[in-house]
Every structure is written in C-alpha cells, then in structure tokens.
Image (cartoon, rainbow over all chains, first blue to last red):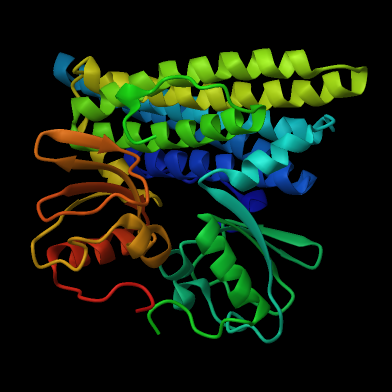
Length: 203
Length: 203
C-alpha cells in the first residue's frame, strides 16, 4: 500500500479486508498527529483520503460478512465482526477529525504540539544525512521497528511524500522520515539519522 | 498510574491533563484488543474504568481551558484544544465499545483473533520462565520498548493484574506480560521470556 493515490479495490477475503481496515485506522491516527505536530497539510489530506478508503473497505466487509451468515450462530459471530469494524471506523473518523484541524487552518494552541511531543508515544522527524548508516539500506534490512522501536509512517523525498513505506523501500541521503515511537527510540534514531551513532540494533 | 483502582483526581495543568488523556486513550485501544484476543474480562473491565477516568479528565480539561480564554485569539486556540480532546474521547469510546464485546459475552467470530494477530501491530503474551534474563530486572533497566520494540501493557502476577507498569516495575519468574509490537518484536521478546535468547538490545 505504498501509493494510496493509485489504490483500487481488488476483491479480497473478509480477513484481508479486516486486517487492512485495522492497519489503516491505526496508521491514520499516527498520521493525523503527525500532520498536527508538523502542520503538514499533505499528511492531513492523506488522512482524509484514507478515511474514504476505509469507508469503502468497511462497506465491502459488511457485504461479505452478511452474505456469509447461514445459521443463527453464524449470524451472532458475524455481528461481532460488524461490531469490531464499527469501532475501527469510529477510530478512523476521530483521526480524520484531527486532520481537519490542519486542513481548516484552525489557529492551534501552542500546548497541542507539546502534548503530542510529551506523550508516551512520540512522533519524530528524522533528516537522513549522507554520513548516516541508514543511507542505501532498505527498511527490511534495517528492521527499524525492531531495532530502534521507531515505526516509519511517511517519508518525504524532495517534494514527494511516500506513506507507510514497504520493507523494500530504500533510504537515501536527504530523505525526511516521520516515525512513531518512545522518546528514547526517537532520540536514538535521530542520532543514527544524523550519522552520530554508527551501529544499529544487535549488529 | 500503576494502580488505576486507586486513582484520585489531583489538580494538574491543562497540559498534564491533556497528555494523560492522549496516553490513556492509546492505552485503552491496545488493552481493548488484548481483552478481545485473550478473552480476558479483567482487561475489558479496566478499559471501561479508564473510559470513566478519561471522561473525568476531559471534563476538567474543558473547565480549565474555557476559563483560560481571555481574547478572541485565545478563544480560537482553546477551541483547538477542545477539538483534539473530542477526537481523543471518540477514540476512547471506540476502545470501550470493543471491550464491551467481551463483557457482554458476545460469541466472537474466529476471524477476529486472526485479524488482531495478523495486523501490523500485534498483541503478544509472554510467560517469563526462571531462566529468562528478564527475571529480577526493572522495565527501566531493560528498556524493553527501545530494545525489543515491545510495549508492555499489562502484567498478570498470580491472580493480580497490573496495568501500564512503570519503569521501576521488576519482572519476576512466572509473570505473564502482555505487550504490543511488530510480529518480529513479539517473536524476539517471546524467545527472551522463554530464556532461549540470553542478550537483549545493544548489550
């Protein structure tokens, strides 16, 4: 799901649709906080596009799920799927509401950025310098989430944004990464991106 | 905030209340998925208690925030705080709705657990064996979130649950940890908890 712009719905199993809904909603929350923190309209716009995408997934999930019910027991079980999908949809709507603050150019209270920076899960921005050991490596090779505790949400290369990069995404010098993690993890990856720390994880 | 049962509201700054709201809502989502995955009613009950706690925080935030407005510009900025607090509250309500599935003993479709296990952010349960290097160390010493990528949500010791453990929480043999991370991180910590892997992070 590298390029959301190119997204087209391809028939999938109920499970695949459902997993994608859950992943998308969680990603939307992180991206919404990132858009607020950095005042980046493009991140906010992506959240709104993802909301529409998730609504469509939800619709397909419901159609598939309702069709599958063949007995009262199955109907009750399938209701549990619709229940969870509804909660996921609520989360995605909350993320979209957050992103709308940026799109509607609401005057933000300075406290808002502090709250995002000081909560347990922090959003960080990492500028990759030519000296960094990240340069020329893929996310798969680096295993950033396991090795640093930072989850990469989006990458800006020049004027282009890439969202939710795959494992085969190769980092280049000058890339701006946006990621989510603990304060310690964020600080650690910042030093790696700056080229100050030259080892990563269990190397 | 180790023992939610003992929680009492102490006057705090708007920022502190707001940070606690954001942390609580995110924790509630993870805990709700954990309750669904493991069918643990106590985790679900905790989510419901946290929802009430968050409602109270939200009320205090609103009172503080509204009182602080002294000019139209401040009023607009403060509206942004209420806007974000509303989104956080929506997320916490979605988590509570998820947890209610467990409390209302809804018959769950088997796909639901698979979806939680197969999404990008996975919930894992770790039984700490006497051989594990985790035994006798605090979460602070271990820096689990940074070193393994797993965030500990709750710990069961015997029949007692501890939620959102602090850094000074010391792990004992027999503890059952519930944590959130990527599949790779979860697998890694499982081996550490089992005593198979004897080093952690950058040691």
